[in-house]
Length: 102
Image (cartoon, rainbow, N blue to C red):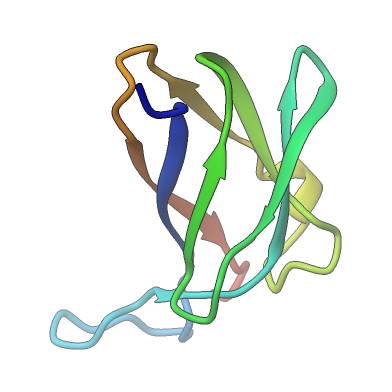
């Protein structure tokens, strides 16, 4: 059986002050992230330039926190909850972060 993992993409937005229907208003980004469980760091990962990442974790509930240098507004306050199942399958997520552009 494969080790459980979370995989997916991180995006940030809006990337322009005015969003239009025919133009994407968010974009993938590369940054470092900490994965916490019960307030303690369980893992860390770096998304690539396409925003993609994979991190191996035991089944359970986690919080993904962007590193302080992530290109978003107030990274530490933008934690995202992720739950890893015990099925042996990948948990696929899309994590969206706010740039603060208005």
